[in-house]
Image (cartoon, one colour):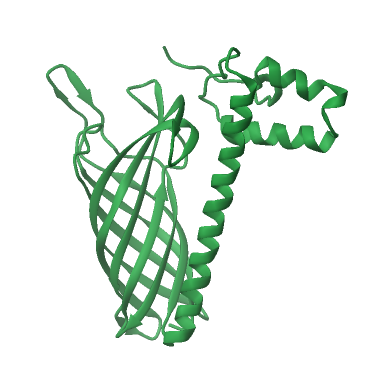
Length: 268
């Protein structure tokens, strides 16, 4: 059954036991109540999610919310460490470090039907994302990127889902002219398809409001940096993802195209 929209209320998503504690004057300061509400919003925020089961123990909810916050902080810490590493390595090797934010879309084969089952096409939607690379020798180096579907799609017309595509690649960035640099890359990664609306627990991710279907993939791509102000650039780009065993959709071949805006630290 298709799930409807829910009102953007935080308290309405709280199980009765926890809601009572939030309204209890002896439960703690107003700040403590606010923090609890924010924790709940982080897990259950969205427009296509069902309200939690009111019979679920409040203590379990609190544990899941704390786990979610800890995961978020760990991820932010890893991102900060990775960025610091790339910048320090760039200075140490005397080479370039480039970072960019971009957006685009994807296309794939049209939907197919097999044995009465419909396999939808994995195409369309806005895909924002981040890329970063470190050139270490003769304009060759390593690159990493992650792109995700900005809004949840509807799988089969009713189940909210979101693909996330990430990869680690070898990159070659040949200098073409004063204001233009090419990019050619290839590598491996994975596609994480998240289906929302189900409370799930795993030893790796903790409590989440989705289940994931992960697929190994290889990718190849190219781009062209056009420098327009100092070391800032705009980059049209294209990427072909070859997803292994992408059984949820009609094809494992996904083409992403888009444009990114970035900056070259340490020069062009």
